[in-house]
Length: 331
Ligand code: MN
Ligand code: MN
Image 1 (spheres, rainbow, N blue to C red):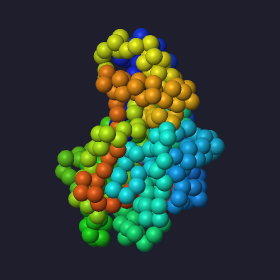
Image 2: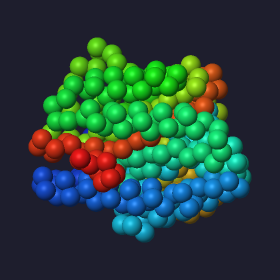
Image 3: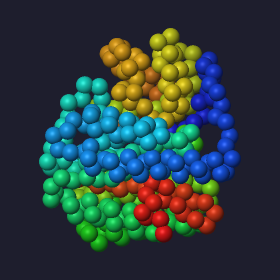
């Protein structure tokens, strides 16, 4: 659900950044497929990592390690969102949170290969709790994916998701959507609502990748930001007062751009380089105030309802719709 833009080079920056080299059509498809394959393998290994009594911190580190092991890079910090938290939670340095038997856990994994992204999520439950919700969310994604084809109206996705949610007596989270993907961009502009709306006018088009991700809930169907819980950031590109950053801030910006471009980041990824944690936190907060970084607060269902999410990435190539993150679902 993270929103980015990759126009960093165009800002009034004193930092020079290399332009992203262009790729041919085949290379681009190849990279999308490879990212999807890595994401699929990681997803398969998640069940052995995500268990009760495990620290969220260790789960996150293991999942991101396995992304690298399989030959990809994390496209964003793995989101581990429990119960009524829908998204944008990732463990922070010193995080002691532990999964319990009755945790309902969303694991949202992002992988990129040369900037081409696979975005996929699953929901895990260890008890009978919320089994119906989890199954409904998975069915909603399957129905939505079955409706996806080259040239199909974006609307078909929301129609499918909403009808499955209603059938099982759950609500769709209306302010969380699927999205188009682009190179180094998680949210490339097009939004794919999880409910039917005439306002979603576009069509799914060839040469593009889309993340389809229904969120279902036993609650009201909206999320709100928890402003005091921010664990994910990304370089913002539209800031203008770049000259007002300090030397320390400049070195942090430089490090982030060189390593992660405009993809989302978290404390865990920076602390090795900026070992003084309280200094790092001060810099992050200050760069958010200066609009150099965008902060992504944790998102919670407004009524405290449980939330389940499933997500796959689809690449539309010619007349084909290829689910890059799950070969089992390709028809
Ligand atoms: Mn997504
Ligand atoms: Mn995702």
